[in-house]
Amino acid sequence: MVMVMNGERMTRLVLGTRNPHKLAELRELLRDLPIPLLDLSQFPLAPQVEETGSTFHENATIKAITLARALGEWVLAEDSGLVVPALGGEPGVHSAVYAGRHGDDAANNALLLERIAQVPDEKREAFYVCVAVLADPLGTVRAQTEGHCHGRIAKQARGQHGFGYDPLFEIPEYHRTFGELSPLAKRVLSHRARAVEKLLPHLRRFLDTTAP
Ligand code: ITT
Image 1 (cartoon, rainbow, N blue to C red):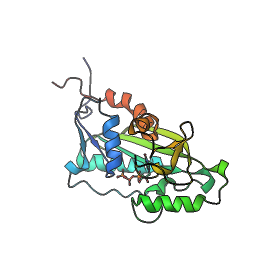
Image 2: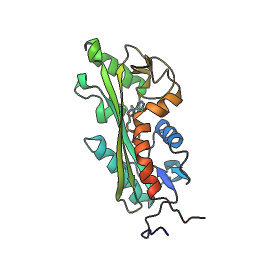
Image 3: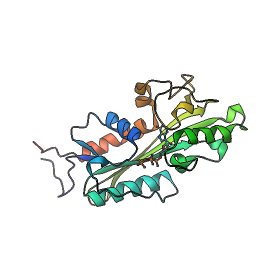
Image 4: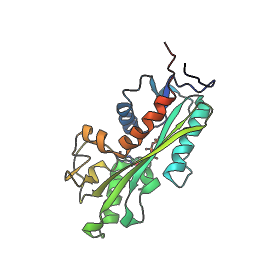
């Protein structure tokens, strides 16, 4: 028999993001989990969470805890972004708002190209980071994982797949950007895929194994 403390069992999971592209990728990565995956569109009163942290860890934790407490649900939240060492780590935790307006991918990409124009070719390396946090319905963090994906910034945007910085993010081994590579390739190689892969054993640990 599996011993579980009251309130610990997970019978459903809320994906705590308002980014539709992230949501679609998370749903795909978690598709084998045998419980319903809900999202914030099903919780109209879910609060807007302010990302006041200065690290991916802090922001992912703030999102997961705030939403879990407000909804009384298990929540998986993640904070992610692009880090370009030659630009001092920009855009980093500010990836979504780099050019000023939240989620304006075209403006963010234009600013990145402008900022990196003076950087020598061999220093155009970059990596994506994703920190995923699982919080229980009381708002206690139960697991956190991190995934990275290494690449370089292309000279111009290429491809229509993905979102955000993907048309500029080139995977050196393939000489293709995430905009050009198939969604299947991103599902295997991405920072989000790697963070979720590490989170899966933790998620399975909290599943309600006695549910009918
Ligand atoms: P939530 O906080 O509601 O999850 P958000 O879009 O505000 O949504 P973040 O604060 O974590 O999420 O910012 C993520 C930004 O990082 C995103 O807007 C992109 O600019 C960039 N980013 C993260 N993952 C990416 C990916 O897989 N492909 C391209 N860009 C990505």
